[in-house]
Image (tube, rainbow, N blue to C red; front, side, top):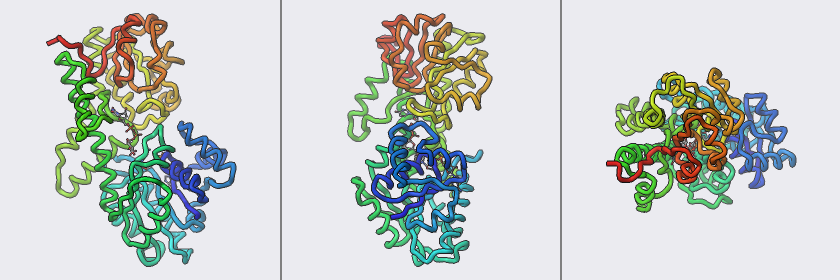
Length: 440
Ligand code: NAD
Ligand code: UGA
């Protein structure tokens, strides 16, 4: 089967590689020439090693190729997956311009071809987008009719960055929303080799399932942050509290880690987008507003903890470890490092930062701070440190590194370090939600 994926980003390339591994021929179309060249040389435009290894193999075998000729690639394919970005506009609404542009290209190809093709929306879009924005473009530009001449489906993506390939090959579920039975049946058949529960539904429900999922994840994280902020003031370590709470199967153990808030290209934008969509339909969501407010407070909480320990931050050298939105990735979209550094600079601190993979892109957005070449360099002479991303290598920091600090105080903004190890190394450990029993 020939498959076209539009958008050579995380989702497009993970989807393309998954279908390539399942034995299909894949064209990945993108408007970014640099990305097309990178993919055709067997490399990824981002850091995701297992996915890159498979991509490289598929490109070498001629199974997957990237192209800028979207219309041609769609014309030659049976299935077309829209995987372009849907970023936030200042209002919180999603920017659907990339989706519209991709839809126009698909429509041009539909016009040329008599074959029944299935168009699949994989980008995250608010309920009714596929029906009220994509469908009219496809029908108007192609002169063809959905359900009769071509199929239209929604198939939301649930992968996490850092485990994109595994999550694509072994998803927790596959959601197939369709307008007509024929298109839904064809997409179900395409996903047949993937072992996962499969949910068939309508277009809008499929769109909403994605938001319901991401909003719940943001809620769990925000709940953990609230519990942790209270625990630290009550002199209780939140880790044991959240672990015990998570043993209730109705709560569950995952995504209960307090920290500096949720970043990344999706959770913050999806909470904002759903809030905006609900407001547009006359519903003002208190939960979604609160989720955003709690998230905004977390970097301030991290800075407050450091300030409480070392006093005014004015002219103090503060080391920030981890600039990506989480450890293991080089993605800085909506990283909490930005509000964290901004807050430190507002307090007149001197910020020195390090990240194993994300420094190149962070320098472009915050060029005025100091950058170090390693975590050890970053800590040297610092009056305090805040860990912003949970890179595994930060867990290995010990006496050798902490002893180089002017004042060895560590705020673990991701609860990723071992408090005992840090304290054995002679540093003061202050984790988000880490209070020592007996304080109050
Ligand atoms: P991305 O920004 O990494 O990649 C999008 C790609 O689409 C870019 O390479 C861009 O050049 C290309 N593009 C834009 N307009 C185009 C057009 N008209 N024709 C061809 N190519 C075009 O985006 P992403 O992170 O892969 O996210 C894509 C969608 O999937 C978003 O809606 C996002 O919310 C959703 N999603 C992302 C993730 C994730 O982990 N990143 C997970 C689940 C869902
Ligand atoms: C998230 C979801 O987990 C995916 O299921 C979804 O497909 C994706 O968004 C998307 O729609 O794009 P991802 O953006 O890769 O995936 O990031 P997560 O691993 O969910 O982490 C998001 C943020 O939450 C990070 O800043 C992380 O540090 C933070 N987090 C995560 C916590 O603070 N606590 C936790 O317990 C878990």
